[in-house]
Length: 323
Image (tube, rainbow, N blue to C red):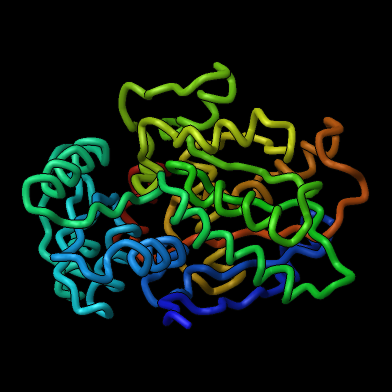
């Protein structure tokens, strides 16, 4: 059997969140992956399928995908080139270099970096590793729900699964994972921040929408266009996907509350998912009849914390809260 690069992460019950929302709430701790985020699931699977005889890999990233690709490449003894936009935190760039990757900084947003990564893959004969838009990635990410099902046991089923959405790779993986375990009647709450809400814009328009720019501070959610498969899942009727958007301030408050209550620091992109419970959104959806009352156990995918440190958290507080 091929070596797995990801680990089976803990599924932890949060007593404080359970009390807040009135239903048992479980945290799927993807921040504890070796690369710091869920991205290693899909990227590890894709590289095993496509890069075993490669001259090297190239990946575009706002942070977490690049770290996952660099980690996997190092484990596979492959050269890695990671192309990041200028908005990427310096600590992420350093982590990439610590894994032995060559880092190129191109453009202001992920889309700029991605265009350069595609160019490099063609000009230098490298294996292109997309950060979110590929069936092999989604298949790798689907393992997260298989683990949740195994941890909850055969008699339990979530009332809903909450995920953050950037380019849509995790969302697609979660839907495929729900298919794999026979939970297609479990709704998915897809969370984004204002200014990085390409999925919500697409859902509302009924077609793919390219944002003019990324104005959210949640740079790891910073794809201007969601992957087509995510939109198709939302339109298919096979699974209920509830698309919601919170402010950067709400996401930050969720990060701060999570740090206080669970003693874990996660990035703003992950705060979008946590804001669904901390901001009262779950109860609002119940009041609107979009989620049932009573609600079965909630599962929140804590997608990652590799792109933040204490200094950045303080800077975000100053910028978004003025304190």
